[in-house]
Image 1 (cartoon, rainbow, N blue to C red):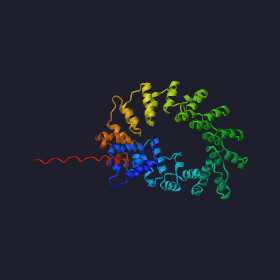
Image 2 (cartoon, helix red, strand yellow):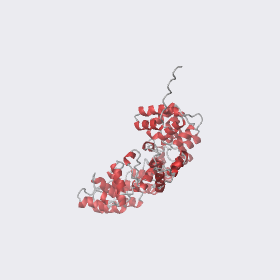
Image 3 (cartoon, rainbow, N blue to C red):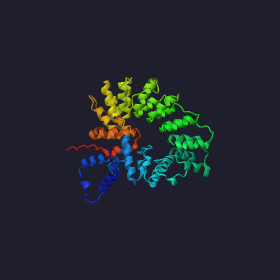
Image 4 (cartoon, rainbow, N blue to C red):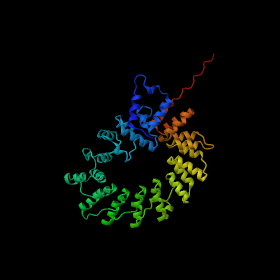
Length: 421
């Protein structure tokens, strides 16, 4: 999906009113197609998507919504979108102005520490006043490699002493030079194994090697777990060769991230990890992981895998697993899919032999605020379920959803009885 600021500006201008705009002359079906191609943010600023409808967006679409909003430096009321915010680290550096950051703080979309991350990324030192915990500001500055901020907090303002937390956060940021400087500045003071754990998480193998050579604290099994989760196969291999802590959760982390090179190494060097009763291989990663596992005979419980994939809304994975292992789709699976936000999965399951939309299906969707897209799809095709959906949403105390249903699908009053002649 490609949605640009120019697209947003054009669509906003076209739908902002005025005499006989070209946009107004387009059929509604064509308007829907244009807005779908432009992206959910364009639909929102054009008034075609309400905040509650945005709550049901799948994660990748929600991320795109915020990327577009930040690219446009939108000046609207951010408080309306508090339930839609996707607070992932990669979004925050896309904030383009101090004003946007201040408005996000005022709307409660970001915390002080997250705002510091943005300010450090852009070099906005004027927005780093430690209104909250100065240690938290020092940690964020260490991860960003902002040595001057640490020196200001410790030496000029006297708010903190030098401490190991700074080293841990600097390691998480892969800041080799800052870690070396802290090592010299703090002298013989003991550190923590977590410093190397976080260095492994960063993927900076030079930093991991330096800590191994110059510090005595070592690491824990979490170092390999972190490296596996992030797909740092080179760090996983090095830890295997030079450290003995292992990583009991490494398989699950590598699986969820779809890191086949890490999984291949772990299968060769630690096959026992794959059979661990609590942390072993679950086969709920991306499709490429499931195919890899199937080729190596690692899938022990296909039915459990299918239900986990339904819970994750993985339409492609469910279709592959059901076809590969001959698992028939059941009505219970359809009802479970109705609680999520993957309309492609729900429609695929519904298309399987014998499957239908029943009362439990509608009630399942109406009990989940994230299933609003599926619920709308059901009700647009059969209005007989509107009353049940509205009642279920109200009983589940989903008042915003119930109000949206009443507005989007108004029920016709029953016809008055005819007077006898």
